[in-house]
Image (tube, rainbow over all chains, first blue to last red; front, side, top):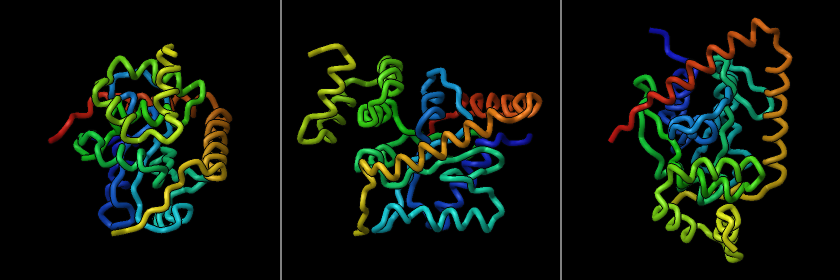
Length: 174
Length: 57
């Protein structure tokens, strides 16, 4: 049976990990929401990655070069694997790297991978906090373990208590 | 221990990724109807695969 473009992309990402170009990765964004049974329509794949290197702006360069050599199309920040546009987000924050470390281990069509958990998706959406993120949080909350979410908000909140303040705003609590 | 500098709130990083996403959306929107149907089929298959993903321990 022919694998989906998604499975082909995950195989390619596992090869990156095998070659040491990334330490670890997890599926985020719309595909993570679909895994958690939240309706979402997206073609491109968002990947959170932990990559060693002092300059996080340049850590993707060897990855782009690797895919270029393999004949993959690179357009802007997207790498086309199969025909699927893939965007890799390296070392965004301690929270996003923790989301990768604690992501759910899953198999997609027999390909091992990781998917960011609901509580981390909510915390990441609280950081971005655009209108689309607030709507996303409302849908994700139904699936969240509130104890785990609160623990994350305590662990990754900043001095301004931004995550807690924003979370209260979403809940409509002042 | 390996050092990691986090991107955090770099406007430059997010702006470049936002532009890239807009370009992808624009490119997909410019495809012919028949090409869009093919992409739609692939996208649905991807979503189905994701819904059927199994947790492993």
